[in-house]
Amino acid sequence: MNQTNFAESMLKGRMAETLFEELMHQSGNIIYRFGYEAIVQNLAQLDNKFDRYSEVGEKIRAIPDFIVVDKKGKPAFVEVKFRWKPELHESDYKMLEKIDKFWSAKIVFLNCWEQPYFRVCDPPYLDKAKKLLLRPLLDEVDWKIDKKIYTEYENLVHRYLTPTLVPPKK
Image 1 (cartoon, rainbow, N blue to C red):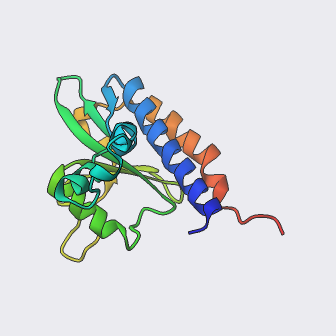
Image 2 (tube, one colour; image 1 turned 180 degrees about the horizontal axis):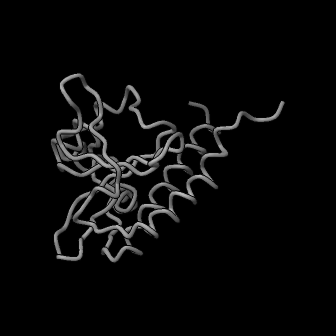
Image 3 (cartoon, rainbow, N blue to C red; image 1 turned 90 degrees about the horizontal axis):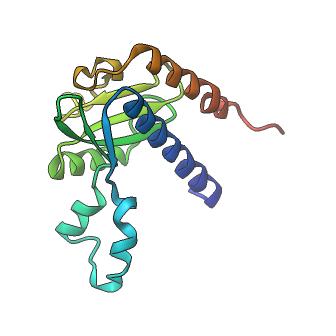
């Protein structure tokens, strides 16, 4: 992956996280940023003393992006991923394994290929055929997502992320 693709991928990932965060907040849930990026600055102070590939290091690198607390006070770890289409990359299988092993987090996939753009899955994330077990985010009953607000966020994905599927001009 070249630097431009990496930067674009990071930007879209951050956009997906922000869209999810605001959707949860506007639907009345409490949401806290929790992920690796939120704590990596503190770990950088450890520099060479911190082994990223030890069991603790692997667990830290797999920290979910958010903690969502629903209206009843029930917390859930949530990882948010942007994908062009609602399907996995080859490297995602290992990521799913780590998230399940260390955190048992819900994973929200935001895609810009087909609606619903926001989909969620719980562990185990895959069926026996290794197909992702996704359902629409609106079906996540604990979070009581307001349909009207949800539609506004689907429209934002359509407006700002879907146009990026168009090939660049020559």
